[in-house]
Length: 165
Image (cartoon, rainbow, N blue to C red):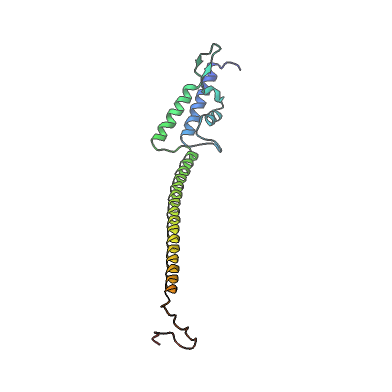
């Protein structure tokens, strides 16, 4: 890759600053986000120019437009801290995260209520079983004593005993 002349570099920096202003004002291209990738595409420069480079001896040097990338990130962060939403996708992500958190909370409450109802059902069934066993035991005890008489079965045409009619 050929080295840039100072005029080309100035034109590129101006294009990056112009693209930066457009993105930070919320004018995002279709399918783009408010990030360095979209900034590079809008400015027509290589995205790698925003990142540090390594020399052959292993030391690092700043990328040609790294200072612009840092400025972009700084301005974006300042807008976000001020409560301004530049990227509608980010707003949608935040809204969906809040919705997921609410749904998780509702699900936890519903699981808790379900556990309480299951415990109540188990207790009610065990009590009904104990009452049934007690009734069965008392019937067997009454039958064993032999001093309990059965009432005659009611005829279908007459009223039962003790009826007010």
